[in-house]
Length: 602
Image (tube, rainbow, N blue to C red; front, top):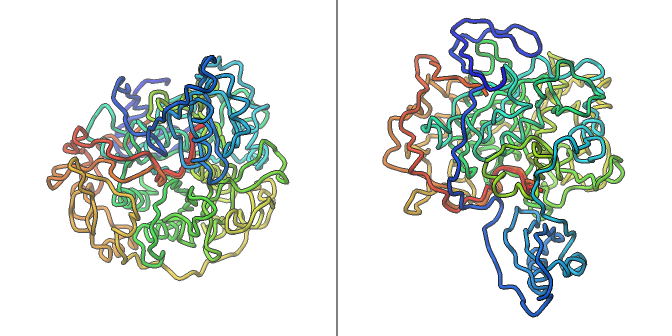
């Protein structure tokens, strides 16, 4: 279909890529490709702020300057920046929470900078406009093709299991209609709960770029691929190339969202997981907050746990706060879900060379990551013109259509794809059994269990392993705690700088966690287009407009960044039309994307 738009009417059979006919009795717009506005001012940097220093003109003054990417040693970002200045350079941008800097330095100073105090590596920051035909996925250790061989996904493909019949819900920044995600039926958009939902030109569109990257890792597949082959290195294929993506957009162009939006999205997935031909078996949450609230009362942890208990495998990024974090992000703190840490392959396909990534969050010894997956410089689909593309495309773009990213976001997406593969092989497997199966068959790598759990994802060992009879018996969360504490330190702000704080949602409506928890247990939190007593189709914002406030980007668990839709469908007599989310009143605030757990883009 390419970029064409097709409306599927009520009760019309839909042919999915796995040739299994499913019926969705709602009006659905397929391949709802929109044109991205050009020239919008994007003033917030992902994972850091724009900053510059004075160059030391006395040093290397005769040399022309070059743009470089400087990776700092752990905990030594300041030393690396000082080294740049001492060698006559200028720091242009800080690119994430794992020590990435873009710097302009004299060309003659580059060798000295590579060995300067605080510096781990220096690479050229060249624009990514290479001819796609020059990219060889077989020689790139961080390509999905290589990772899928290393961690065993292609072993599943050879056995005939490619994620067929499985829908993976991705609550993120939306999914762009790029090749690899634009085949008919590949992506279905759920409701747009983001601050951009009232702008028809932005609705469902991934203006940030994070969600597209995740969806590509999980289930991307080039539209011209008619049959999945493990030897096909010329086309892009995600871990579960025949799975489908159900996209719920909650974040805008700066990655900003509130926990109340995340709760609404999770609850929608649980309530509609089997509607009209859907089969949502996996939920990817490459997101987290730095909440210190105990999981057993935390509302966000409770929502994720309820999705799990309703038969959905919930895969959550552990977070990117490094080895000194002492706790996982929320909702990875909930022991029922699968919490994923990031492994650094160190440029090798041998597990014996793999270590925990420097940014991956550490557990407290009681709640640790369950397992790890590669999460450094992972190449997935690029979203041209998105925020991360305009900010980091020079260092992160590969062969024009791919984008590199590092973080527990990417690691979680790999495990979500793996879960879809296992479910396509074992359709009756429960979430508890699947979690035990993956964690029992990991491959040992270097690093302590509080950072990598039981080891690294190893699907080749999983394929023929016996399904465990495991039933998890942790203390259940009540969900009766504080919504405000679920937010941790990250808030959205209104235009006057006032944070959305306290026990209220984005409509400034009181959020009764006990009542919501009761509804979540019975999967009745949504009543048509109404959640928590407000119509999210948008008649009022209670006079409040929220911008990206005090966020610093770490909640979207991507450490670094080297469609179709339910088109105004009616749900239980409620209309999802969304007329009054006045997106023009939302500004960038102090967001830089830190809640989405992509740590850096390069």
